[in-house]
Image (cartoon, rainbow, N blue to C red):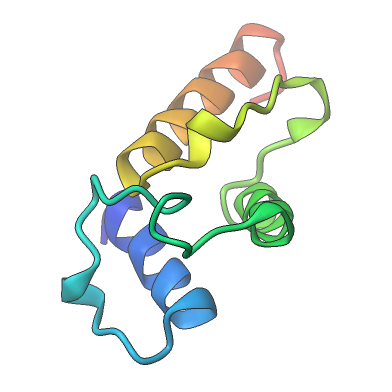
Length: 89
């Protein structure tokens, strides 16, 4: 299972329990669609840190990094690269 599938499954289980995983496209705007609000965003950030072993304290967090499943996946890659660049892999 790739990151996109993992992220999609998490979002559906946590925030869209009546929706099938296949119904959430990876480019769907989670904010505009009402799936994610500020509290949900905090929960997602916490989950990402735990699930992908990311120390997010030194990484700039911007809402656009969490707008879609693809954006979240890109954020994970960038956060991981940031940590490796600082010798924290």
